[in-house]
Image (cartoon, rainbow, N blue to C red; front, top):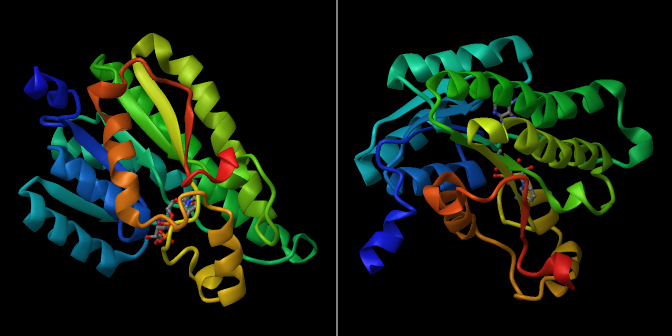
Length: 259
Ligand SMILES: NC(=O)c1ccc[n+]([C@@H]2O[C@H](COP(=O)([O-])OP(=O)(O)OC[C@H]3O[C@@H](n4cnc5c(N)ncnc54)[C@H](O)[C@@H]3O)[C@@H](O)[C@H]2O)c1
């Protein structure tokens, strides 16, 4: 029985596509999914780091790892990413829309160009990559899993990242809408909303002792997340263990939103 239960989380034979996989939470999720048995196409704009990450995970897990360097802000390139995955692996079962960017500035100082870039990478790319992935999953008629990356700012305000928050509010709504639209095709769509994790994205915050202390004081578990803390939730959402879960945003935040 114990063996059978753990098999619910196995990803053997599954093909996944992870964006923003070169570093940070994307890298950790990619390593976790490959560790659970999935073969993966990793996508990122950081070409050299991405190639190194793919090589590292391949060596660690023995899975098939391929990588594609592209800028997700280029909407016209998104269809070719799914096509590349199908070309290389024959199918697509799991999409992780993880890549994101931000500009830390007061609301009054953000330019239309900065706003458009944040929206294009964080929300528009997730929308259209999901569209191309869903079309492929529907053609396969195998069901599928889409995992989006939301944020505390999907639900609450924080200073200097209001444009980012607007994009993550969009990801929250996208998750709900897609879950309803794709349920008939057995495609489950959920999101992870990380609290504060120590990555390059949040380094400007960690570099400030005052901000670090303020954040830590608001986390009931008493520490920020490390990339490894996201792996279990990612495997759960990618696997058969979550086949009856769709349209949920899981706040993975050490208790922040509960307090
Ligand atoms: N770290 C946190 O505390 C935190 C909190 C809430 C949400 N998140 C979300 O988690 C996800 C991962 O964040 P992270 O902390 O690992 O950030 P990170 O900056 O370390 O990693 C993001 C990755 O996305 C890639 N990327 C950015 N723009 C891209 C583009 N245009 N095309 C292709 N790739 C691009 C980057 O090169 C990088 O490898 C993001 O969606 C972020 O919004 C993170």
